[in-house]
Amino acid sequence: MAKSPVVATEEMSLEEALYLMRKYKIRRLPVVRGENDLCGMIVISDIYPYVGPHAMTKALFSEEVTEQLRNVRVGSVMTKSPITCDRNATIDEIGVIMRRNKIGAVPVVEGIKLVGIITESDILGALSNIAQVGSDSRRIFFRIPVMDRINTFYRIVS
Image (cartoon, rainbow, N blue to C red; front, side, top):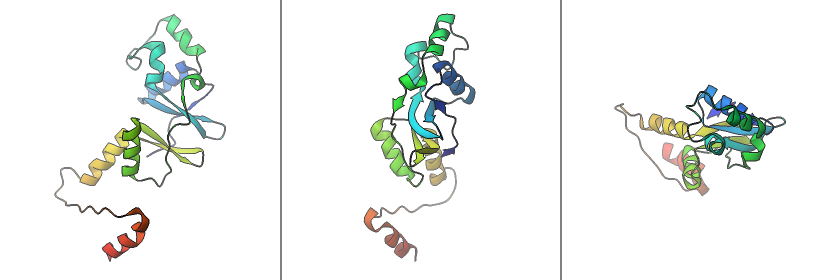
């Protein structure tokens, strides 16, 4: 999980949001209001209708496009109430959520406070570490019923 992710606000212009995406080489921004309360998510494809699919690679836009980006607020194009998870969610749970909903990131919240974001790159990195690609280690996988997860785990370990 990336803690303290780069964020947008509802009042921010699309020009400012695109600037942040380019600067930090990211494709999505959680949208917050007030004291870091998550209220939405904006992704680069939300900006495509205003600038085209090459928004991340174009250095400059025409004055007309730039003006349009300045006049449109993030709050008007963001996904409201995005799918979230809490910080105790497992990689597999988050992976399933992302796959089922065809999304590339899940904001991590405590209540409504944004505490991080998990992207498909984070999931892939975690899976690579688990698999320890290139190492000579072995791993054992157990599927434990949720209802008795802790007791079963302790019995297996002991």
